Amino acid sequence: MADGVRARIAGTGRYLPEKSIDNFELYTRDDVRAAFDIERARTSLRDGDAGELAPEDVFDRWVRQVTGIEARRVLDPGNTGLTTEHMCAAAGKAALDAAGMSPEDLDLLYVASLTCSDSVPNGACTVADLLGVPRLGGYVFNAACAGFVYGLASGWAAIASGMAENVLVISGDTLTTLVDYSDLNTAVLFGDGAGAAVLTSAAGERGFLGKPAMYGEFDRAPLNLVGQGWETKDEPAPKLHMVGGPRILRNAIHTMAAAADRAVASADLGWDDVDIVIPHQANLRITVGLEKHLGLSKGRVIHNIGCYGNMSASTVGVTLDEVLRGLHGSVPDPATLVLTAIGGGYTTAAAVVRI
Image (cartoon, rainbow, N blue to C red; front, side):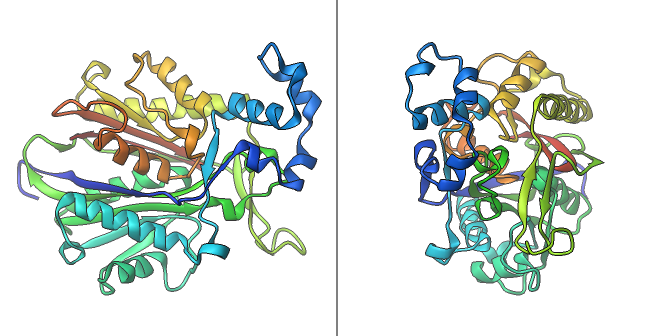
């Protein structure tokens, strides 16, 4: 790679399903109501009038208190006929449009997902075909909620090595198809969506600063898929299982902060040089906790889980697109952004990008 040339983000895009289910609609499900302990939740609410609330109001306030989520987007493949790959293609097309590029300009396609409709052909082949470039090389990988940042790091490496000049990175998941609605730790949490970014090689000061940080730690308990047939008899359909709890929240905060610290140090920067932090939107208490842990002023850490839910790796991609399109306020020019995420397994990644 030539001196002075770096990988930069040329354009971003997102796709969010039209259907949105708020907490009140979610509570109409029989399995959700059966799993919800109304009186226990009522006593946990910080609202002074909790004793007078109707059950559906207790549920709504409890969900918002423990997660920050008011609604989540749902693709509903059975009714729409759409798949994770369709969402990814739509987000990728939006990113290409923002970059002023066509699919034919691409050298590689990386798709981060754990809910592609097919294993073979792999989801990247399907997405490339939907984009009109069926011979484009690429692959799908599963890094759980850290997948988008893992994909950006992979795209950075491909450009830094000279293997590619233009790389499309997409994350997309339909996690609502994996939800066990009798398990409230997951029933209230997840939503569907896709985010994308086009990386290109360019000279100048904008782009990825330093090496992205990526590492993992084996831990099955916090989040796993159960029911793949060989694990759970008579339950072949995979279902997400999440433990949750204060220990998981604290670990997410500290691990995302550590990855971000490592990426900022690799870029030879300090936190005073950072304008905006985009963390994985797993839970509002986590992103607010990260903001406090890093000692950053209000507005520098982005929070948007309220209307989307946890969309796995797509939360960073979707939020990045919203930030760059001005939906979270004005963005300095240039702006230094830190992206950081933690996913089940555990997977962790962070990167510093100047836009």
